[in-house]
Image 1 (cartoon, rainbow, N blue to C red):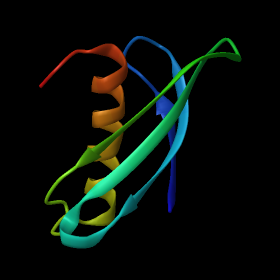
Image 2 (image 1 turned 90 degrees about the vertical axis):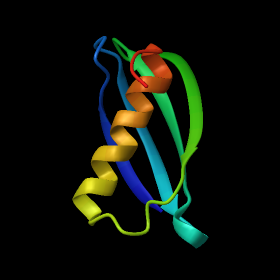
Image 3 (image 1 turned 90 degrees about the horizontal axis):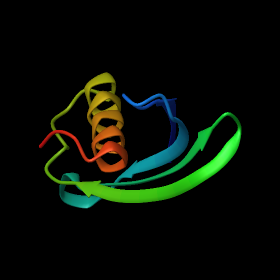
Image 4 (image 1 turned 180 degrees about the vertical axis):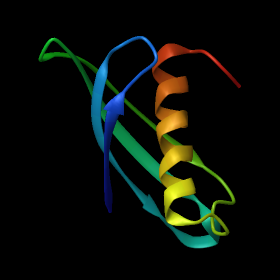
Length: 74
């Protein structure tokens, strides 16, 4: 598993992890906090990620986490 953390576009901090599985499927989970207080959890998956470089995979997971929390984007 790979750890990931950051801040969403609406200023909520998150910590989570993801794992690249078979056939390029990435499963991720994240816990969200604002001002240190628990706000919620989300999880998701991305498909066909096997060809991405590690930095690009990390960026794709962060974008998916932000989109799932804010509901913005694709």
